[in-house]
Image (cartoon, one colour):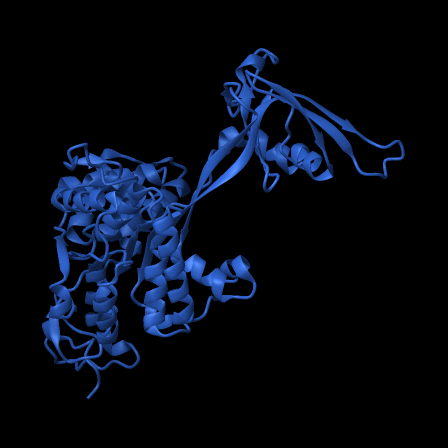
Length: 467
């Protein structure tokens, strides 16, 4: 019953997705010469930063570098995380891991272990193996059932290619798999001899006229040629961390689904590294250096930076991309100040990509893309007002007003967001500057107020620790 409801409403529902902060990003928006387009694949502006990211991306795909570190530095709301997400879309099957620096301190393990696991999640291993498969077009399926209906089912499967035709005996397991995949005469299937797994590749072109109408999901393929049984090379891509977990836990691969992996002994990792090196020498495997994205890098302390200094020198290190929105800031755990809150010796290792503030035209284009992503129809006047709000406050604040403005418009029974809706939500929700001004005006009415009433507004010591 549920399947029929889903099928009948498939055209109306389409794909169900949550709209996230960067769900409109599809790629870096570069052409073949790595030149950034003004507006492409959800990316707007930041031409120099995107071109620099594209150069790094090309080198990563070639697999020629590892252990490099890139810092994306810029003010809040200038698209640092958006560029990182765009790179993850462009990478394809290259491993990409994204963490926030605060995760290192919130896990129930040491900081170095947390960073080590993040590093090894970002390093892929392509394992090659040969397997025997049977591939052909189904001519006929015969299933024999006992008269009483109690005994096991048996049957015969007739497969053919353009050169030959063979009959196979079927057991209970294969009959169940064929029934589950809804295989019928005229389908082209693939059977893995080692596991018995059946894959339905599509419908044969020779059977295209069997039905007057077919659904949009029906795929027509050519009938295979040559032998029915062939050897095929299969490539599996797994991360080093997944191999670590499988080999360090009694439940094997099921440990990947338990969530808590705990600390993994260095001896286990050394044995895995040795085995992977042997496979690489024999041509059975290939190391794929991936990308580790660490957001808010200034939240790490000196111990973490010291570990990263050593970890980046390892031959199995991934490319590490970091982001920071700080200027001259105190290094966590010390009294020393440094650019971006990063120690000078570590900063010397980094390639720095700078992001600039968006201009008014770029902001308008971004807001328009977000309206399309959130399926909100907005009047041109309202979009201009929202662009002005973004330039005077922040881009993130203006993006939040899109969905809330849409709700207000729906309340007055309109499908289009107008200027009056933007004004309404602007008055309902405060931006950062108005919120700070409100606190200055009414600070005496709040609890635990530590700012003297006569103190200069420009020298409010909100972040200063108590003496």
